[in-house]
Image 1 (cartoon, helix red, strand yellow):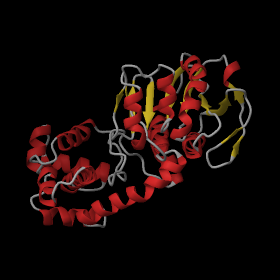
Image 2: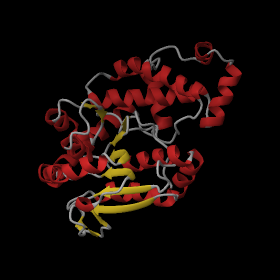
Image 3: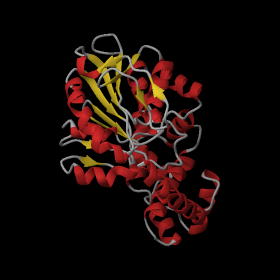
Length: 330
């Protein structure tokens, strides 16, 4: 699994760390087995999480001088990053040189950037912090829509539960997809939202396919949702029979290619509804639906709400969240 066979994972923490960013990945790795996960603070003393809970710490970052497999840097409320990121940067930079891979959760990407580990790389962070991150670190390319992004030995993830998606991906990489799937099932979470999938996704129930042909099929639809993705066209593009393609989709996803395409088109429509004021007919056309009514029926099947209702709820949720996010710094 690792370069040294120990599966050592260090989680670098400081006061104010977001509890979910620590608990989610740690729970996944613990349940997977094969990892030794330890928390480390700058001075080896306990830290207090953002919700007021005290977290015991195993090690001091300043005195840690051993090689580890994975270094995880969780996130912090944005108003605390100006203090936390510079304080952790030196220790994280030093530890990163001794780690096989370095992982950030949520705004932990700010710490990695402060440490100079992200220059010239593509990363992601919590959607609310992406604009600020891009302004502060122009030498880093930010993908505001991804759940997690891998660039060489650096893996960054979005906020909150995205840390769980990322940890499951790491387990799949280290111990195999069967182990990751078992952990996901035990934790009653989906395995796994593809890393490039929208942070606001209705398609999280579908696992990343292990089959290369299916990955190509997904790429075809994502690249052009409004294109011709009928079974006959897709099978010809992939150079396989319609029967075999249908069998692959049913085996991997439990649905027909047509239903799969419908779900990806719903997700494309979600992004358009969230990001602008385009009229419903325009959204339907750009997303590959033959009419607004066809899109409405697809939304009802996949999400349980109509497109207009989805747009309204999304904006209402943002309006309600804004004061809370400002108070809590996220």
